Length: 287
Image (spheres, rainbow, N blue to C red):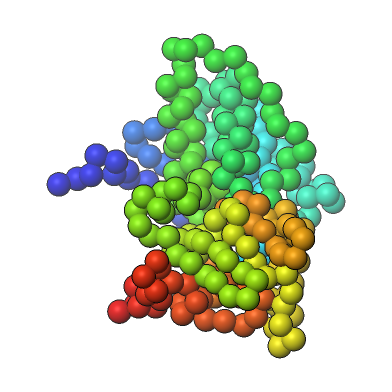
């Protein structure tokens, strides 16, 4: 029996290169996406899909396996022309990949993309997965009630395509309340540290309010110290009296970077993270 929430997304590789230009479509939606690495900008300029009014995203790489990667969201009458301007902008040297969302039926209007840009920036800020480079929040346009459902469908399609293509910038992280309800909450505790989190498809999500030790041990690697400094710079961690506090939910790529950041020392996250009964994540997931 097919799940009522199931979706079919088609990924087409115009040049046969899975790491080159990729085009995503859903037969039941008019929104289409074209994604390409910065090095393939010239190839993307030859395509019709991005030469339209739409919303675009620029993505960079995280400085390490715990820091937030940078991202920028914008709108344009001609997405590929605007992305090319960013390519020439010295202030945008950080981006490595771009996505443009346009309409297969070319029915996007300036008002609809303004609405889409606003909703995407708002959702990205709320999700807190990427370090958003937008300086200002786009103004919210007036939307007639009759069009709200259509525009909401556009946003949900963009959200799906972004996740499928490997950029879940609009997807909210799980919350501690959800983990409590589903009885999936984990704990990582040590000297001066008391953290809660959940193991998810995103890796190990540490919940807001978790406490990390203020100092690292003498044998802690430079990588651990740098990771903590990056999180402090991003505002994920904040020093408060004699401890470091997580000011927002944060996803680590795997359990060990999370436990090392919290404990301030080298550690095996599969052993350090435990449920309320003392069972390690290793026993819960690998047995």
